[in-house]
Length: 99
Image (tube, rainbow, N blue to C red; front, side, top):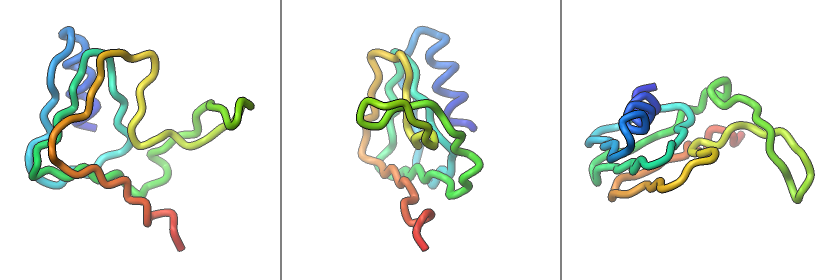
């Protein structure tokens, strides 16, 4: 996934801005890392895939009890100094589970 690769590269260099340029960008889950600003151009759309195989089961909790769930479309673990900025659209593709 190009977005995750750019985020990882930016993080390894100490941080900065990852620009999502104009256009439609279909992706699986995006994992943010420390010191990275994901900036979405106002003419960009990030659309998450409806391929459920792209969202692995991860450990989590529900009301204080251990639980398993699908990975969120956007997540971060043990990260600090992160941001999502810009005027673009983040489309979670919520209709994919309907029906």
